[in-house]
Image 1 (cartoon, rainbow, N blue to C red):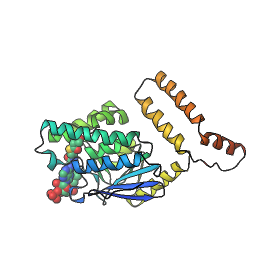
Image 2 (cartoon, rainbow, N blue to C red):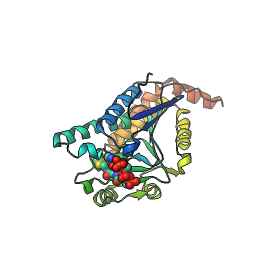
Image 3 (tube, rainbow, N blue to C red):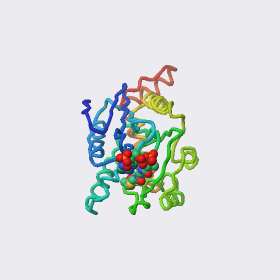
Image 4 (cartoon, rainbow, N blue to C red):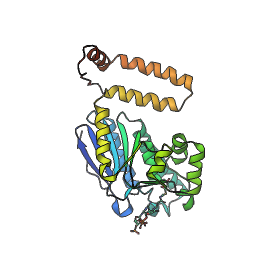
Length: 263
Ligand code: CAA
């Protein structure tokens, strides 16, 4: 897989893990159109590749993950431009949510507005102790436009999501953990290593099976239980066609380590 060089993204590949840092320190890593286009390009490249199995998404520096969409760019934008930006982000964020790779947000500071929203499009969120989450949009005269009105209630429930969106309250990492917005909270100096350890644990399992499980969870969460269970049976059957299923079970019975290679 060939990774281009980007103006606003830093990309490191370590074995089959990609660490992507949004890098606009002067604007606390706010998402402007150029950054969203770069994320669009990068996530398309990674999604089509077999070389990367987990993506860790973080913000450059120690202060901010992503401080939202770029307010300086939005201030004079027309309704049509606002819609276009929202749809651009929707495409990128949906790719993060549905790509075959597992996506982990390493939230290392402010995750406000579009920052909270991009973290919610990732499969898993790990926060540093200094992380702050919030949806400040209604204080700017707009509403969350990068998926916040949809993903936040799905993650933490309608009542809590409404409170956060209507009040613009910022919550600390421990409160985000308490309400289920993040999976884990760790000291900042341990954040990336914690995410890498989690990524390595995931890549040590059957990667094709992980991808199928991600698909089943995602589609199932947007449908009723009976349809979800039927879908699960079909995706379960797909896993039976894999080399990994044969190898994983055989290895268990032979009391040896499985060599799982499908992706
Ligand atoms: N867009 C553009 N620039 C931003 C930004 C943003 N979202 N957030 C911070 N910056 C810029 C500041 O303008 C400032 O630039 P200058 O040095 O040129 O003045 C620089 O980053 C540093 O910011 P502060 O001086 O404000 O830093 P602070 O430590 O005092 O405060 C903060 C940090 C609380 C995160 C504060 O910067 C802030 O409130 N930022 C805006 C957060 C926000 O409202 N996000 C939502 C945006 S709207 C959105 O995301 C819509 C959507 O759903 C898609």
